Image (tube, rainbow, N blue to C red):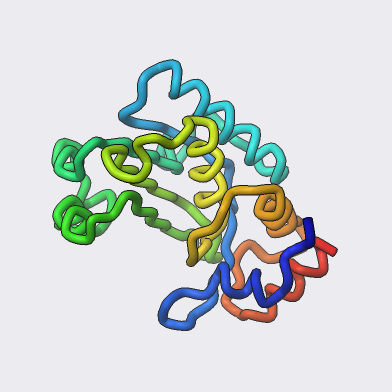
Length: 192
């Protein structure tokens, strides 16, 4: 399988407004998952831990400042999010359930950043009543892990190429956050 090109990598981190951002976690990831049965929860925890281990980034039980910093919410209807305490304060979006329902979205991801631009918090919301209903738990967990590891701006297939890209982005020599597209060349060089 050929490595990703610099142009392909640049596209992955370029938002619809044309801005570029490639940021990774600057602190250990402390995941918490809501809305899953215990047997599926174990699969998700294992896959998230394995994915970040592959990227050489620590996963811990709790973040000393926030408790959890990677929060994954599973619902069957966006209206269920109304039951999440302080959701508007947590996300900074007063009408998130209504917006997601209005867009017929099946997923939504939200990042918060440290002062140095590193990922501080990632919230992932998944509606399992639509296109995700038939997703295999391990494959979905892998996708969630990859989409929360870096600030990807576009959707992608979770595969070996993306795992290699994530590992390259976590090279400690590289900065934790870059808003210049030339960063794609650095990442492509590490994949070659």
